Structure formats: structure tokens, C-alpha cells
Image (tube, rainbow, N blue to C red):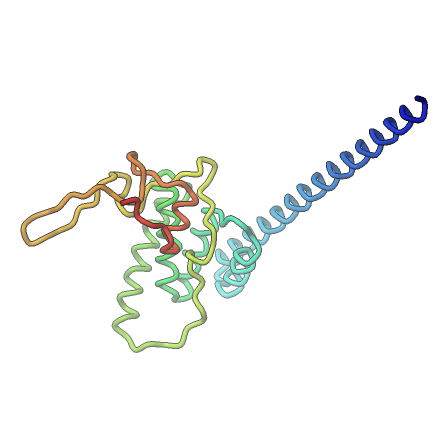
Length: 206
């Protein structure tokens, strides 16, 4: 009897030690993820600093480093990378990222008003670039290559119908109104659906 009790006590002890070790490992992983996030935030802040100093190539390197090492791209990075891309003459890239920021934040984001201004300039730059001869450019970094972080709500206004849940098609016999095939009845996409949409992987619901 004593031997059975001893065996049970030893088994419980082993399980307790294993559980404690697993909890310690999970805590370590959480701390490492937090440290990595803090490091990347410092790199982002550094990129913003160099952009403000007019060192656009150095800022670009900082932003690209963050993009290459972060899981969910924060909306602030989308704005800063788009703005810096304009200064580098990468107008299409600038339009892409600034548009993503506006889609995510609408008119209430910290940089929304500024994003609209730079987006207009970038779109004008695209038109100018198309009117000129093609020039050799560095490889573009497009937002469709990354998972965009939609923020704490995890939801985004549908960029297809702009939240109306209705798509208007202009025709020779007048406008045609169709239900948006991507969002819910409130004109909203989940973050997963939004990322699938910008990659061209989201299938219409009907």
C-alpha cells in the first residue's frame, strides 16, 4: 500500500515539475516575443526619425527591416512607409500603403488627414511617372505580401463597397445596384477576410 502511495506521489511530483517547466517555457516565449516587438517598435521610431531628417533611404531600410520581421503590420507603419516611399519617388508603392492606412483607419486615424494629402500627391506622382519613360526601380514592397494588422477590433470597412454593402455599376442604361459579394450586411470584413481580399484570394459569397 505504501509503495502504491509513494508511486502516486512521485507521479504527481513529476507532473507538477513538467507543468511548471511548460509554464516557464511559455512565459519565456512571451517575454521574447515582447522584447522582439519592442525592438521592432524602436526600429520603426528610428525610421520615422530619419525620414523627418530627410534621410529617406536610411528610413526605407529601417521600415523594410520591420516589415521583414514583424507578423502583423501595424497601421502606423503602413502610413510611414507609404509617406517615405513618396519621397523616394516610389509613387505606386506610396499609393498602395497609404491607401491601406486609410482603409484601416478611415477619417479617425492619427495620421488620416495627412495620409489623404500624401495619397493625393502620390497619385499625381504616378500619373507623372506614367507620362515619362520607364526607369529602373528597386523591387517594390507591396502590402499584399504581408498580413496587415487591423487593430484591436479585428474588423475593417469593406474597400469594395466602402461599407454600404452595395456595389454600384455604371451602365449604358443607368446605374445597377448589386449586393457586395464580400462583406457582411453591415459592410464589414474580418481581418482575415481583408487580408485575403488584398491578396486576391477572397472568394465571393455568391
